[in-house]
Length: 390
Image 1 (cartoon, one colour):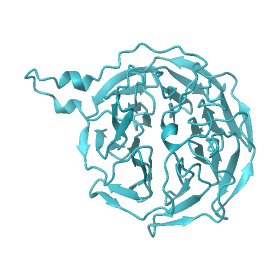
Image 2 (image 1 turned 30 degrees about the horizontal axis):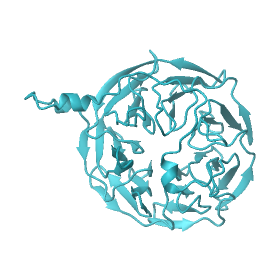
Image 3 (image 1 turned 90 degrees about the vertical axis):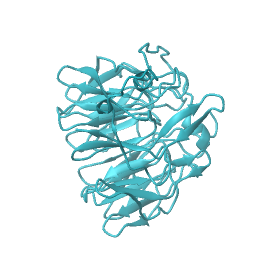
Image 4 (image 1 turned 135 degrees about the vertical axis):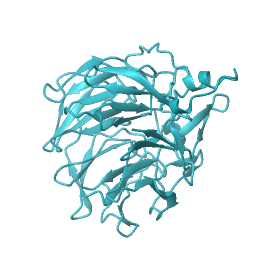
């Protein structure tokens, strides 16, 4: 691939090992129900619009702090601007500007500490594959650089908080465009990074899910060192990496994964950034360390969010269908008991590369790209936010 610039990274074009595509209808239902036929639109079918962000953002990060406030860090506001600012949200006051990060970041990670009062931000795609990292402290609204930089500059990587309070940082791509297999550990007490064993293969744009024992991390898919989507998956256990007992049923990148209440993991969707998107879904069984297929989603989705709800069901929100370059606005619910998907409320704005955060009474979806100009080949960022009421 050569050197990856920030603009190119958004649309990495993996060469798929399996070019089978889904044929689900990705028609945006909201466009059907809002046609000018004189029919009154039932607003109860839609998410509730909420206060907008101060800045348009995509490829940002978000987390729920111990004080009940959401922090949003970094992202892109347009094709040329990477954001250094952060914003904070509460249901009672909406959004307000917080302290500014030491460095602008996107395609970075933001990982909460054990007590949810601090968060670690690592890496960025621009400036290319930053080695810098910094810690946000919610008690005094400050960002502080870590005592040492990461051992490797990286972006489009993964991060997971382990039960020993260390944060595992893994994979991604460096400033030369090389896909990384190496991994490192951030230790809060020393505010520094140390090397740990590398993954079996290099990966970027993969998922990393902390399992119920809070020491095992499941890594699935992504792009490998040849920029091909991979179906392989591996586990970080006690400092070592081992492959799962079988591969995923679908090679995928730009996909989503979520830990279910039974300790298994739902993996769904994804694509290659160009003409290929998937609706397929599968379950990783944490006991047998194997993947089995479940019913596909109703819509092809890549770069979307999966949110575990208090009911035990999973909400799939937004995404992009790269086969048609459309944004499915109809959301879906996965029922782990029946292993089936059903459609649910419709987003006011289809969106991708956004964030979704579970609150006490709702799911708040934040920003992202909401349109694509097929002629200029450019996306349009949004500041809009909306809520799915529980």
